[in-house]
Image (cartoon, rainbow, N blue to C red; front, side, top):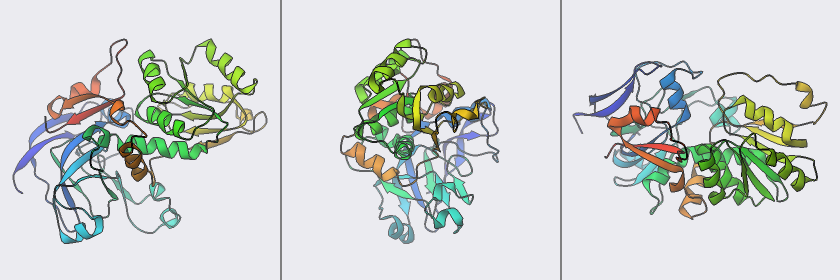
Amino acid sequence: MKGTMKAVRCEGFGGRHRLVSDQPFPQPGPGEVLVRVDASGICAADRAMWDATGPWALNFPFTPGHEFTGTVVELDAQAAQATGLKPGDRAIAELNVTTGDDFYRQRGAYHLTDHMQVLGATLDGGWAEYMIYPAGAVIHKVPDGLSNKAACYTEPLANAIHGVQRADIQFDDVVVISGAGPIGMGMVQAAALKTPRKVILINPGAAKRAAALTLGADLAFAPDDPQLAEALGDLTQGRGADVFLEASGQTSAFEQGLQIVRKGARLVVFGVYKSPASIDLNIFGEFKELDIRGGHLAPFTYETALDLMARGKIDGDASVTHVYPLEDFEAALTHKPEPGELQIKVMLDPTL
């Protein structure tokens, strides 16, 4: 296929994005898959690129968008054999395309390798009418019957599932999740599937708290609600929560987590933070002997996310609350919800 297409190009951080209508049509090379983009999400990282608050150094220009789903248009025999795909199939590529055989990949931690390209950052992503899934990308077929909205939610949900797996949730645990963005809301649903004693959400927005209660949370509180401490005290005989997952990206939320967990609790830190936290390290060891675990990306969890949504165990559509055409990417990036408005995942649909 020849010609040009519409795409959003990031030419620098700090609002330096623009829509172009003459971007050269991507040409697949050996082992690559050309897809028509059906939907592409907007992540907090994309907003950090827009307002220049992210911690990354990237080369410009590039097409953003690392949460996407597409329909296969063209692939060669090598790509077909490697992926099992054919034209007309819907498919998702994991955002990190790793190479080499370093320490991390040898141990299955491919998401931690330094040898990678990133779709939507170092490689062109999904804020376009078409994109390339590179040779070597980990590609997953979208199950029949799963909507494009739900498929677009796969990447943040896969992150959420990885965080829940890191938390090692047990049947009798009282689990607290801080933050109700796309990853936090995915954690609510995934944690509920582990059937702990209680799943509690902390989030300032009432609309998100109400939504969480329909998606698996047993209780939901604002961070400053005094009933949170009362509920935890009643549930745990005053010990504190067994598990705390931080997905808000607010250092104050992590600091709150340190206060409300019991001795020996497990804390998973999955947010991206714009400022450092000031913490008394004695609480980690001397006072509580806490198990602090980081969470990063979504190794081996894309298939799980797709399967859970396909089986109706997780509602992917519920978390995609806003859809914009590609031309309105700036409005989508900068939209601030009105009081009482539910905004979780914002999505671009290049087909509109």
